[in-house]
Length: 607
Image 1 (cartoon, rainbow, N blue to C red):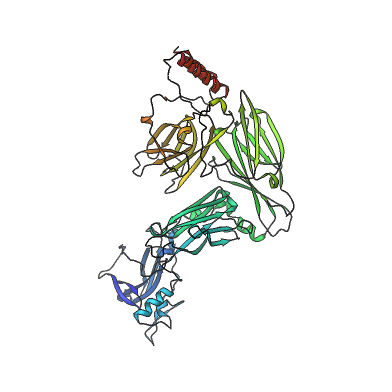
Image 2: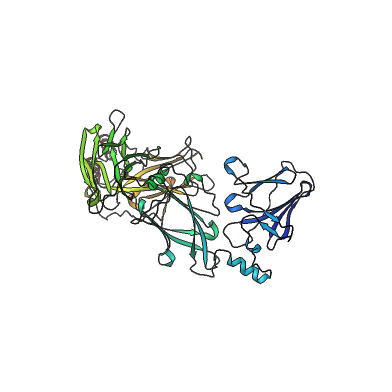
């Protein structure tokens, strides 16, 4: 058997020759693309004289895989299957489409069953100069000053009011791609991005990606030369997660192209039914989103929706005394577990956009059985905004319900947000109810359901990752009381790697952005801290090098903040009084319990 790779104009290049019968034999070959196209296609000629086979075919290696299984069924009958992995199981096999080249017995020329390649076209000229010109012309106008990118899109909602756009940030936000139609299960499309320097050998593109329906407006850089020209953009979990990946080929995980929550969306869009849809999603729950759809009469041709984001924080709950939210009389969310101060649950509800000139008004009812609270209120979404906050704030020894509604999302994380501390301010100058967000950036995480990656703050678990992140980064958000000297104990545990790291971090001094990253050799969990999401001038946190004058304080089960314990003063009575005064203020603010206050008081007084 001969395995021959064909080049225009049908010259042969023998890549493998066998002189013995082959049974269950495997071998690999290195083949470099011969053209400028982003899709690697090869013309391969199998010649088996004993079986009267001399067959030429074109194989799409980029889209259909680099694994070929060759068998002889009968005399003169060759079977070639193609797959994306060596297993060649049914899920990964591409059925041969039977498009072959045949030799015309009269002319001796090759004839393609469907479409002839460029060099077999009737007007093809055989001179080398024209061959080169023809090859460049047939490469979809691919020029040296541009790079062709393949976009793989899924689950992206778009409309006339909120279009999905990709702009070239290097070209003053020049529009590259614009659509007002939703993209459901899967769509592939090609775009061209110009280089800043046409002569540059590498191309790093800065793309401005805008998906207004889920609040995405970001500029990302893509190293097209090194990391590849295939880019995935998929919206998951009813808009709460946006996945952006880059590869050298199109073999992205299929889970991004068949999101369960969009299974019926395409049919609904085509039928154009007027619906009201309530979508619930708990960012801290292991369960997936739940969709409840109620049909309403109407003949609207639009499915434009308004999405309400409801942030819930610091709510007591248990199986006996659950916390329940009702929207327009229907149960929307129910929790039988406490939502602590260190965790914010994000709920999203989608409503059909009202006709022009009308306002969207909803009725929300909050039932906190553990506090005997059952309150109901109407909210004008059109006038007052789509972002709401509901929680319990502590004022001295008492508690009160806190509800906020606004047009912009300041309840959730902001990439450029920086926490600043006024110099000279004392702990008593800050309100005990004022909170600041803390963002944990996770990278290099390997995890499973049985061996998760866990984060603890002051001994309390706030997050559990149960899936590998690969080369992606996850961001976990929590909130802590805003005091002048905010220090917390952070512990990261990677059960799969057998790693554990615990450090005390000074949020006030070094910032509220904390990165937890497992090293490339899987030997340590690195903890760095910064005042911005870019981690400029980041501080490396090392528990072994923490100043001895700042020992850790074991928090109570309800405390969310630890404060540095002052060393016993050797000065006069004024030092003792200052320390005791500050401890009293922390107790009054609810940060220290009475038991903790008494213990610290004894330490200060040396009792």
